Image (cartoon, rainbow, N blue to C red; front, side, top):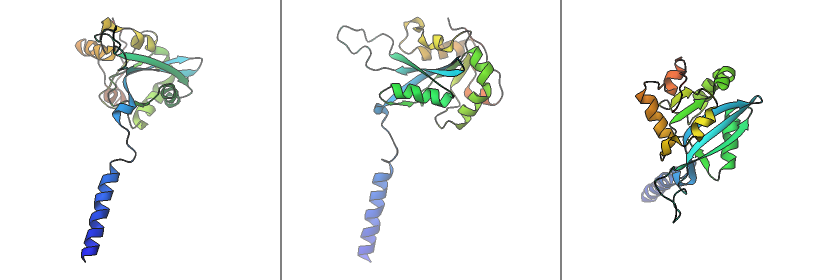
Length: 185
């Protein structure tokens, strides 16, 4: 009886110990996405990711007050394949848990609106509170701008959208709201 209790206790402790370790990845080993832009070129989807680059501003002669983000782009036949191609260019996997905005170009909206809705519904990392809008031109230009020299441009863009009452969330978009075109100044 005691042997059986000890065995069950050991199994329970081992199960608890190892269950939290499987399939997880440390945040320090991930690329933290701040913004996603989707454009079209030659019938291919181009994904541009703005991500935190914590190596910026760590040098002795660099100011730490500058922009802390970098950008990477890649193309694919689908949204998922384009995002995966971006991820392959970076040393760590993408983490969308802190993503703030999704920007799409007018051409992307015309050609792939239904595909975007499907992607957002099926993507396990998609968050309903992310702001989404249509740019006037290339979506990547919005992310690539050093927006008023802020540390995290996507955050500044969010504040502009909220202030102007032009913000639509992924949740509202999936519920059928029409995307607003917004010019980022």
